[in-house]
Structure formats: structure tokens, C-alpha cells
Length: 507
Image (tube, rainbow, N blue to C red):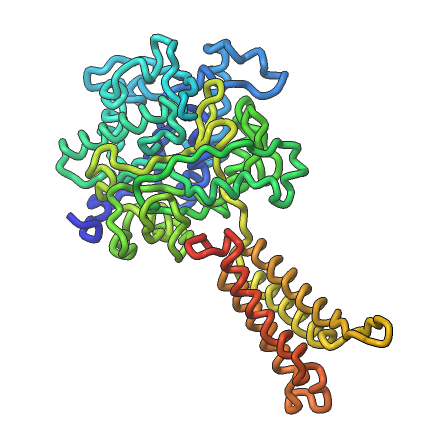
């Protein structure tokens, strides 16, 4: 069955999305904005957390006594998670195996899965710890937690399930195990019910976004006191980017929810750091891959009435490269998948997701504690942005035209050379203005149009019919020709040299 032929819930019930995460705080850093957006749109949201993060590092002296005390830390992180969910508006939260709500039904006994911890492998990726607790999530085969996830699916009958990709970010064993268990449970559920519900999305982040998020040159980074990253581990996605969900409107709630995980996260303005103190930007867009994404016709993949269609569109252009083949980015997370099976059609055939999370020493995350990824914040253009661009264009166009002919004569003996400092100043002012617009809006279209408009103003100010007697503003000299054409040329050059404006980057 094609994506376009799938239908929304036949019973007309409110769309339901299930998030499955390994440890407390994973859900907020990687999918908190999407969760809040879904709640705001009226969808039902359930969070299923598989462990309590017993092995996590602890930030700050006030709570340092919790580190190493697995039981006490688990209890504390339960409270942090409850506060974070309250902020995001999620009222249905469960722990895997914790009574019937956690899937302990249908012959399965209640049990508690614990944080498995991890260690670093020679390839720089995380791998299973050589010594882990007997109750660790990774101490059992994936079929065991999958059985509990399956029971949760049987209870909720969700339209969409969101979890990690097969790479578990950078290889954290709990993330990998949750991916395996959730995918297996969804396959079993669909086989039993003969239905294309639920769809399945995997958390992922484009490499370019990760690189920009850790850029210490971002405005405001130096005020946080956070450290710059030394190395950015990346895992290439094996599936095309299917969803880029804009969560700019939920960024405040997401930041507050992240701050609620005080043992794991320090938030400072638009940035945050984990226990290693390495700063990164808080994502205002959350990305997902889907191995079942058909591409390239995004419209056929998001039929009207699909689960996430209620969320405002995020983007209208292809997303940043993921290291895999390019695919159109669907307008919103819910619109990007429907009641269809999505990635469930092929077990484990997903992109290598890179959620940013925190738990056992040096563990969880898109990249580890020295390598998670976020996206450089951007400001929407909108009406106020359009006015701002217009004022910048008018100011630069008029001032540049007035001064571009100014020059001085530099005498060297009996020979004089004309120094066109007015032209240099006009071009420099234009370059600074376009750079300003590029870094603020990250829109190639806006930068090119702004450059063209400045050139247009220069041309108009040289027309006698527009301003009789003042056509000297732009004369027929070479300086005037340079001034008239340089703004539009600079606009095109910036789209080629600035990473955020290159083809494929999100506008």
C-alpha cells in the first residue's frame, strides 16, 4: 500500500503519538519541542521511558551525592522527568515494565529495566559496558523489552511511534536496544492486526546542523561560560531525512523542561551543556528519518487528515543533507507520517539517529557528552522581518549612492592617484548589511533579493525623471557601474560561501 492510500484513524478518535526513550531527559532534548507542539495541536501524547538513568553523571555540588547511588539518583530523576513533562504538557508518562501501564500484562510480570551504562570502543563510538547491572536493559535480548512495548501498543493503539534510529546516536547500547525493541514490537503489532498503523519515525539530525550547533562563534556563546567542542562525532544516516519539525514556538517550554533535568543539563540562554560543560545550541527544529519514506513526492506522503497534519508547517524546502540521499522535507512532523507503517515495513532499516541525551558516565547523546548536536537558532522573516529587511535595503541603497563617488587624491611626488574610498565604503556597508541579514534569517532568497533591491535603488537614484537635477548620484563612471552591480553580486556570492545559505540548507 502506498503512503498516499493510507487513511487516518477510522474511528475518528484524537490522533495518538507514542514516544519511546531510554533515559529521563532524552525525550526533552531530542523531541521535547515536537511533544509540546503535538499537545498544543490537540493530539494525545504518551511517553514511555525504558530506564530511570541510574548510571547518569550528576552536575553540580549540591546534587553530587546522588552520583553512584543508583537508587537515589533514579528516584531524583523520576521527579525531574515529572516536572519536565508538566512543562511540556504531557500527562501520560510511563516506565517500561512498571505495572500494567508499562506493559506488564498479558502474562508479563512487572519488572524494572535499569541504565546499562557504556564504555568507549576503539572506533570512538560507544559500546556495551563490560560490567553492567543484572537488571540492565541490555542484559536481556531485545525480545524481552519488546514484549512490554508490544503490550503498551496493544493498550494505546497509537497512530505514530517515535524513537531512536538503529545507530542509537553514537552507539549508546540502551538507545540501540530501545530502537530494536520498539521496531520489533511495532512489527509484531502490525502483523497481528493487519494494519499499517502505527507509523514509525526515528530521531535524527543532519550533520550540518550538528556542526553549526557547536560553533563557538555563535552570538552569545561566549557569555555562557561553556567550553567549545574538541571533536564532533558523526554517524551518517542511512535513510533520507523525512521530517524537519519547526518547534520555534515551543522553544521556551523546551528550554524550561530541559532545565528541569538539573542533574543532567545546564541551560544558559539559547545554549545548554551536559556534564562535560561543552556548549551547544538548543534545537529549534527537530529532525526525523523514516526508512519507509518513499520520496520524492512529499505531497503524496502527507495526505489530508494524517496524524500530524494539525501542527503548523515547519519548512517548505528540502532539508539539510544527512549523509544519505536527499529527500523532500515534509511540512510538519505529523504531516510527515500518517497512520501507515512507515519505517515499520523494514525492520532496522532506518537512518542512524543521533539523539542528544545524557545518562551513564560519558553516555547518551546525539554525540556523546562532547558531541551532541543542535541547530543554530534562526529568526523568522515574517512581516516584521520584511520591514526590517526593507529598512536595511533603503538605508544602504540611499547612503551608498550618496557616497560612492567620494574620493581623495594621493600624491606621490608629481603624480596623483585617485583613492575611491567612497566606493569602498559603500560596498563594505552593503556586504556588512547582507551578512547581517544572512546570519539573522539564514535565507538565501532574502539575501539575494536584498542585494538586488539595493542595486535597484542605486539605478533609480541615477534617473533624472525620478529626481530631476540629482542624477549625479549615479553617474556613468566605472565607480558607478561597480556600485550598481556589486550588491546583487554580493548577494549571490554569499549564498555560495555561507554554509547556512548553501543549496540544501534549510531556509
